[in-house]
Length: 141
Image (tube, rainbow, N blue to C red; front, side, top):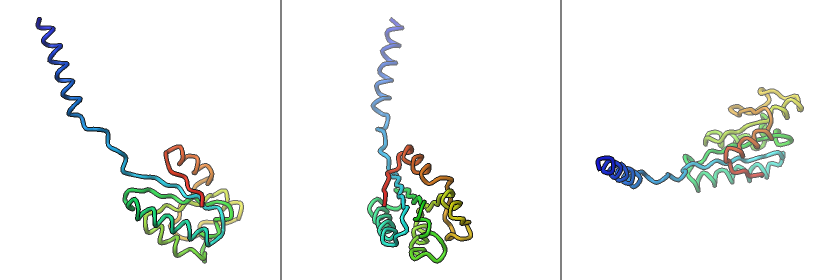
């Protein structure tokens, strides 16, 4: 009888704990990865506009954004770039701007040739694959 009462009490306690447990929270953070591999200032401006619009729509604090640059796109993050000021504004707005070191090596460039405050990844394509595996939305500009 005592064993039955204890089992019933344990069952009731488990049931009340299940009811009291909070529902799984929905993710509030979004992650977006933009690839830019073209040296076209119009495409760069479009990408930067899309990023600004995304931050306004979702709330800048709710979205993590990376731009991964490789191939000819690297020219737009070099010193004296036509869109350099806008890239710096994106960095100020907490956007990570990452340049492929493979591309830099192939073009004989060093960090001294690049805009300040950008980051570097070993391989741009590798970064894209890793981030997609982590759940980043992928946008090709």
